[in-house]
Image (cartoon, rainbow, N blue to C red; front, side, top):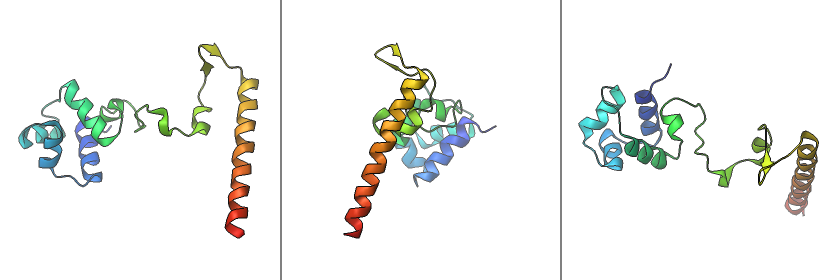
Length: 124
């Protein structure tokens, strides 16, 4: 199983940061940061939150409690992914499967129409 330190290292490398640069993000010494990656030390909750914000991942992802990097920010969530979730509601009122199916059909029709318009525009 992957540990917090390895996940932190992967994110640092994906973002092309040195240990020193990563340490500066949360205002700690390079040696302290190295301790996080080796899992000799554990960061405080505020440091975890700063790393998560910087790398745009959830704290759960950093702690290896989730494989999803998603931060929970719905601003960029794919509606198709949202509709794959169970127990959706609107202002606390549960949406039944047939209602969700109607909404999915409407969204598919809208995206098909937009795709066709884009094709027509590109060809014309």
